[in-house]
Image 1 (cartoon, helix red, strand yellow):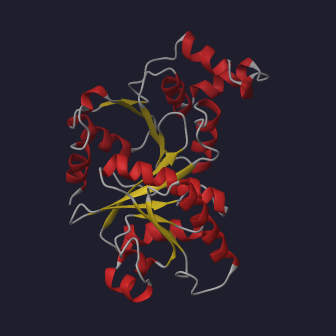
Image 2: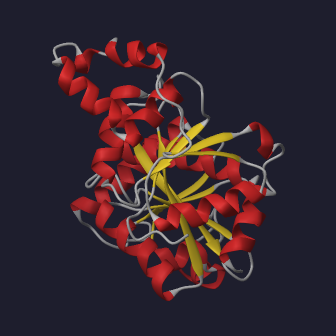
Length: 289
């Protein structure tokens, strides 16, 4: 599936694209090319060149935030001239429905200012992320999480990562999430503190979200291959049909999605940031159009 067809395939899953306005504030040729494609799908796109000047309402909204209360006026003025900050001010004021940024900025900069201006939603303790992996040939979806934010997640963080990723996977794909808590061990085949961390996460998840189909700790092959699942796990819940893969740490998740992107047949869409009050989505600096 070509890039243009991928856009069309994903946009077709949105009922009324003309009612959605997105901000892509970076100056980059990839952004320029993507905007042309997105405009053709019916979405409303605001770029740095087309964004209106910030109103007094926008400025006062930023001035009311605690992190700028002791800033000199000169520093605040400079801060508000940043195109990404302008886009967040517009999102905070409900002028746009989402912000997409990151092909020229670090994830740390994206998240830091999103937390400052947009804030974390009440149901979240942490910001995390997911990649929607889309097979170029079959349109099959897989969710990989977390691949961009939390380096060494605790058991509690893995639970939140899994819950938010499962919910977003279902929302985007209209499929039930089948969650696999990945490890180098399958159902006690190895004993290690990293395995114990995943096991504890599965125990908590099982108590809190029994209605979400899940399994763990489990190796990747058993999570996605029915034959291997049958050979390793008696009475498996997933039966090799996992579609939401929860990685034990950021090393594993980040390497995995890039391997799939570079050597496999999947597009990597994301990272989609999870846990903010409003949609702010990061881009890899290696992002394609």
